Image 1 (cartoon, rainbow, N blue to C red):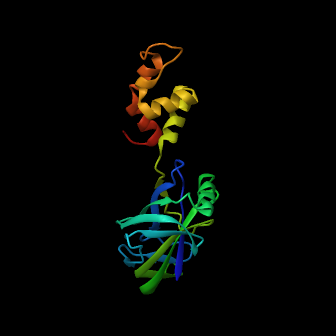
Image 2: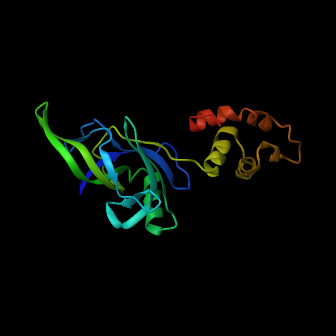
Image 3: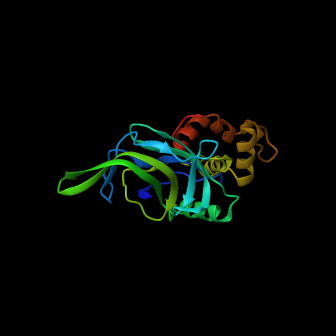
Length: 213
């Protein structure tokens, strides 16, 4: 089974284990002199539910989660979740959040490939392959790939409320859970300055999460 590693960057971190990004980039020569052509993954080993298996260091006895996958013009896009009920998977995700375990790698069997000379280098052009799994690894070989998002749960919203709006932890939890009408300060009414600012919640989402709610 061949392997191609790609680095990724966590742009946001939550406690849920969700992530999204490219596990492989098409038409990009990696540091191992391999290039994958668009649509090359004509076969995929999946679970019965059609999910791609996620592993740690290509060790299929140490599975950490599952992912949906699609191929677009850019590469192999995976949207997955690390199962943090498994102790080593939770440890691995904590290392991801810390920026230590910062790469992914795919395991595949080559079905059809050719070799080409490019700028004095012998490049293996992978035209057709069978995808087995995607793994979290400590080093990457393809600088063009990165994780796009790590989906946020309510705790990330709470953090944004505390950091950007000056709310206490208790206030942020109340607002995130029930909306800004739940906010009370010193027994006062809901019509506080904080509440008025929270009416601009779309701006908060745009600046914090990069998208409108």
